[in-house]
Amino acid sequence: MALILLFALTLRFLLIRSPWPVTNSDEANMGLVALHVAFQGDHPIFFYGLPYMGPVEGYVAAALFRLFGPSLFTLRLALLPFVAGFLLSSYGLVRLLYGRTFAFACLLLFTFGSGDVLFLQLRAVGEYPEMLMFAPLILLLAGWLALSFPASRVQRRSPSWRRLAVYVLLGVSIGLALWIDFLISPFVLAALALLVLFCGRELWGRAGLGLLLGMMVGAEPLLYYNLTAPLSQNSLAVLLSIHHGGADELAARHLTGFHQLSGAFFIALPWATGYQPRCPLSAIPPWGLPTSQTWLCVSAQMGWGLAYVVLALLATLFCLRRLQRLRWTHSLSLPWPGHCWPQLHLKSAEPKLLETGAAHEETIRQCVQLALLASVGLTLFLYAAAPVAAVSPETTFRYLTCALVALPVLLWPLWQRSAHTLGHLRQARQQPRPTSIGARDHGARMATALPLMLLLSLVGATFVVGTARTFADIPASQADYQRRLALIHDLETIGATRVYSEYWTCNWLVFLSQERIICSVLDAKLRPGFNRYEPYRLIVERAPSPAYVFPVADGLLDATTGRQQASFFQQHVLSSPGTAQTYCLYQFVGYLVYQPRPACSSPAPPSAVRGPGPSTA
Image 1 (cartoon, one colour):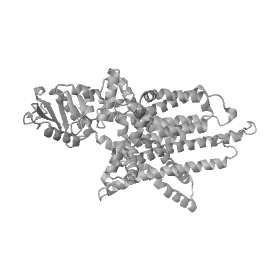
Image 2 (image 1 turned 90 degrees about the horizontal axis):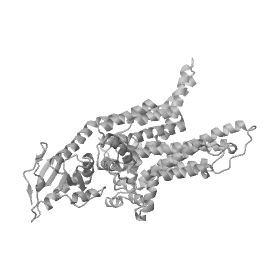
Image 3 (image 1 turned 180 degrees about the horizontal axis):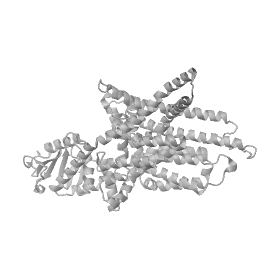
Image 4 (image 1 turned 120 degrees about the vertical axis):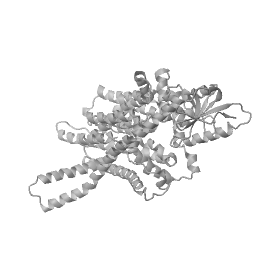
């Protein structure tokens, strides 16, 4: 297990060292948080511009910035502890439910991943690596507390210090996870339900107090903000506004509930759980129809989402059926949540106690599986009910990142049946003379298990191939990173350190230059845009001659907005009558840079393509 964990972290270390994936302004915003925490004494409660997301990644990265210096690599290095926590907590939860062998197989599976899965783990935009870690960790701790709680009243005593420590750890984990993002709420509710069902009486004492104190400590920044913020700006109000975000666009584009269901189950769910390659949105019903070139990709992607839902429903039915059998078999001895535990005499009922204890543990394991499935089901329901499922499923699939955690529960029946069949075949080979009836029975077993084994192999192969495709994308990511550094160098060469640009350019200019360049956001009509860190707007406004940077080349993120800005600038600024301001025009690696004439006396760098001369209004 340790070797597999080291191998998984090494793969991710190589990716972030490359660097992969391509960075953007949201990630740069987290880098700015870390930069200000490390060197300016800032202590933000939330991610700049988002009053609901705790910037834990920024605080972890700030410590690394102090040790190794600020950089994109150091920022992403802070994500590896969360990835390790996800792998370890997933291994522990699966081992708690199914045993060591299957847990090791799942750990090996999660070592790899599609480009989308690895992308959510290795880009420091907040919440997603942490959610992947906290979701299985919270259920693991709750499941362990339920399983280790004595089933018999005569065996109960006050909780040990070890159990109290686990309660406190669980509380801190819940508090931190809620501060980071409310996406974890379904898993928190499921864990608390498990504790109430199986450890209800213990919660009335020191254990419950430790859990509550731990939650308050973990969520202290969140509690402080909501106690001091206006009601209209508290986290719940912001969360509800985000959940209903996109409603106007949904109506304007005449998107229906079918678009929401298709976006949730045939686009977002497959991408969040490891399917690759992506299919074009225009080929997926009801946005469009697949062509002869895309029907295979669309069928596979839709089949992946459908298979996830079917396997989740089957796993739920299996758990409910198993619980029903346990209840009927142990109706006289198996205690159920909400009822008093039976009084048993130790001497006369010792075998009964052992049988009851095993059934009780099996009941808890089935309930933990149901809790995990219910958490993912509620997450899927909330996402499918939101307008973003139809408006932008290709980008908001990240909200379903925790659906990956339930993958072992879905694959367990396939694994169990396949392992059972292989065991029978192994025994059959050891028999000297198999009978015709035995041969037919083995053939039927093999015919039933073969599709299941093929499905397991397909999932594993998809993850491995996805990792290989990700490493193949490294040269393009490196070229993009070098282009960004070249733009920063060119801007510094001409003295353009106070600039205006669009959102997807500004923040990474500031972070990668370590605030040597300050950028303020403008919209398509050059009006003040969305600055996540408001002081930057004032700094650029007070600058004597700020420049304008517009991305216009194909392939640049949000080049459409950059072209609109450049067109508006040429039509309404350069051609305004009575304006004495003149500008120098430069073309740097796909960007148009307009610099006021008093400031453009510096020689242009060799990489620049100079315009035909100063543009004069």
